[in-house]
Length: 182
Image (spheres, rainbow, N blue to C red):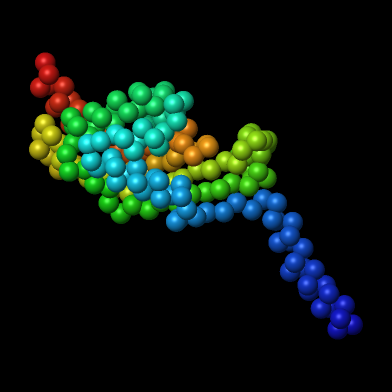
């Protein structure tokens, strides 16, 4: 009887984890992709776009709140304006980055798994949270706001980026910059 109880206990403890292995996604913070996202934020603080040019794919899709930007060149133009015309002394503070490597069996939507959506490649999303800080080049105002960004990578390049933040301070600096050009 003792051996039957031990066998049942072993089955209860081993079988559920074994069946869950198929859906096992994992998260890393010191992997190559997370480190590249950290480097992207560091490089955004300077005025060069060389790292960003190698970081993003040509077919990049960017969603900033409800704004949609298509293509790496269009996004790099926006990034250049932000770094070289709108703000100086840019920093990303309190930055946390982690990368999610999704199992092909993980649910993407109620009715579809990541493997069904993208059968030939693992879905990888990197998430970043932090505080954007800088000084407006036109107004001289110190700017600081919380932001969240997501980066989907494929074959070592970012193919999709999502950014969420309150755009009020950035829009105010853009409005001041445009007023100097009129």
